[in-house]
Amino acid sequence: MLIESKTFTNGADRVAVKALFRKMSINQLGGITALDFDGMSPPSVEGARRLGGCLNLSGNLNSLDLRQVGMSDEACKALFSTLSNGALDKLTFLRLDNNAIGDSGIEALADALSKGALPALQILVLGGNNIGDAGLTALADACASGALASLKKIAVDTKHERHPQLVAACQPRGIQIA
Image (cartoon, rainbow, N blue to C red; front, side, top):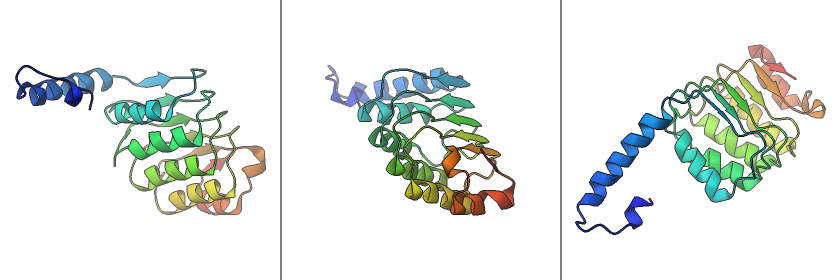
């Protein structure tokens, strides 16, 4: 998108430069196995959208730590709505704890999961957010639909460990709710 806004002496160069930058980005991001943003400044909605775009290119990422970054619902929606089907197909560990994520952010996560993102996810950490019944129900629905097929543990606040839909979706599959 940034390249398309640039002026080139030969307009035909724009496509070639864009293709080169994309190839370079895939090569750079494709080798990363862990990203830890713990404690960084809160991402803007645009920053979260751009992070989602980069994550789509991170084919070997298996651990993503976004705890304590002050992520809002809006930033969470921007991040997860950007993920493509099959994105982060090797990610096994996702930390989103201790942010400002509420129901609409978790609903965006559940939607991305239902569309095939994060198919290898084993551990999801969500405690310390503002998640209510609607967010937990959306997550339970995603789990019950077959998304999160590899999930082994989901960490939520103690008050949510007995959420009926979440328990009903996780218990038959042996998913630990902590």
